[in-house]
Image (cartoon, rainbow, N blue to C red):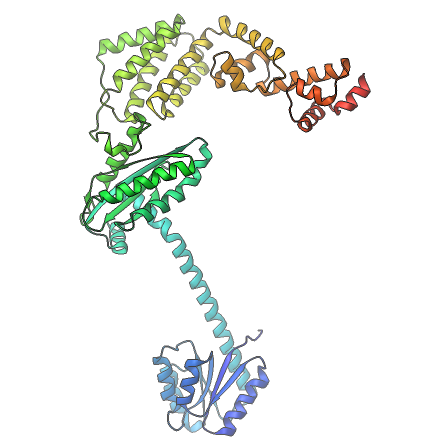
Length: 531
């Protein structure tokens, strides 16, 4: 075992004995730093001021003997220091007593080199093991400290949703010591680029805690069951509803919107008493209010403008439901798209009177539209019915607001009607599309641009396009541009850069790359080889 550099103290009132033992230690371990003391009092001073790991001490000494030194050392908190008693045979009973006081080992005078090296090696091994254990403990403590915030957030997430066990509630209460008035704040955000939403969470987390700090203690965390929501549990310091704090927070959130190019909305739940741990009702109100953004997407602070009275979806009479179902089935069958969209928009408007919970509204609407599909399902393949059922479910459930819901349902109905009557509409549109692409090849065309040109949704236009041409829009455009480029290379003297622009490539390097990949030659090689 390789030795480690340690600090050693040799204590003995007899100078020759002390210097002799110190010299033996230095000879056996040159890398050790060795101090000497002539009594227990001096030894204690050195032990408390120097990096001493091992002490060799005599027992019988003036002023303060070895046992008194050992007791004082341990009393001062130096429990890691290894103390080896060096005694004569007649003092052996004292040595046994000293071991009970906390001595680690003993040597009998005169100390032999072999005995000394064995004790030193043993102490080194013990010290290394203790250091390793201490390091493991520190690592474990660091891991606990690092995981504690996530663990507490997990507990809070379970607490607000009323899933916390009694012992977990006690743990939170003892950890934070919160009491008095509390409130739950729910926040959400949207961005023009969905990937930006992942970055706003930590910023919002820190901002909310910072702004509320003068008025309240708070814990801010993403809700486990609804990752799009950030929740803040707030404990007000002065048992008020914190109107000033809420105003300050709203001002800061508005600044964040401008700086981060995101939209943030929020809602406060009802106040509750921490002593009673009644937090779930406050959370439910906050989340219910924030869900009302479905109807008012332009509103930021929803608890100021939206009633928290939960309404149910307005129930239609059996006669009204049957009339709507028959009209939908007839309009789809007869390709009466405009009349159908008007009717669907009308009964969605009827269903949303009183602003019911969006989840409940969507469930009722899916039930109605599924009933219409089932009424039409005469001779459809299982694949066709399943596909359109899934598309309808997806369209309704993913709607972010009422207008988005109406648009998605309208698009689904258009696509359903178009596919049912594809023989009469798909082919003429695609022929016109081909003519348009042939004459506008030099333009920067995308699927969205072309779909908008023919008044179609891009997703559905993509399906029609591939069904007709057998290629995706991107694949077809590359093929068409390469054909045109080859024709111009062989039948004109135009420069390659000009040909690149004529077939819609502004970046000539990219044109070279695409041409080489598809034609297996660079433009110049192709012109030389085949002209």
